[in-house]
Length: 226
Ligand SMILES: [Zn+2]
Image (cartoon, rainbow, N blue to C red; front, side, top):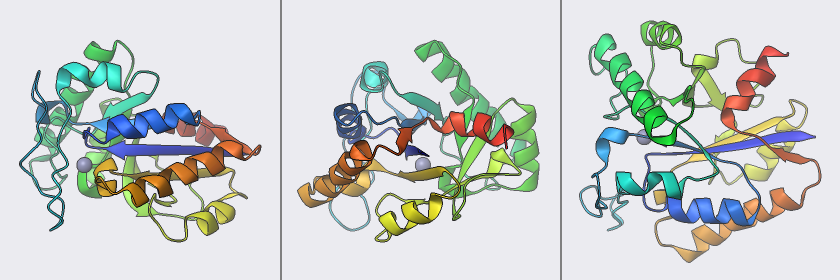
């Protein structure tokens, strides 16, 4: 068996499509949200252009996130998407905790996961985030074996979802028993080929009898048992 998990950052409109595809192929997923970056009742469809593609990622309205992410895990990505080290450490941690509190109130469940915005962290924020009760913090670094992980507040993944060696990395992760990939759904823009490539991955994973989908938070439990 190999436990497979995925997570998606920033709460963008394309997450709707990711969630639909995951439901279609019985895949689990964790979505890392910035509650402070959404409009309350209307979508944000302009503002930040993805690279120089002319594509604007767009944010979900905050009043639709519960329905969009129904059946999936959600985690804190900070209220404001601060990078650790760019603001005061106390401000950073308070912002991450505030996002967690807003998410827990809205979704009515525990939210102990975190994804470091821009993958940035430092020793002080790692310790402070642990003390604040977070169970893990996903980085943007890649490792061949995700577990065991000596410090779950710096939980690395296997690869980005568009990695051209995705299936080789999957094979190499098998001895570890865990395969973890992540990305931003806006990276697929409105490009049918990119969406098809993602769907093909979900389909293949769904058809693999060795694959068991898990949530990212489950890796912490798995890590503790190793
Ligand atoms: Zn982000």
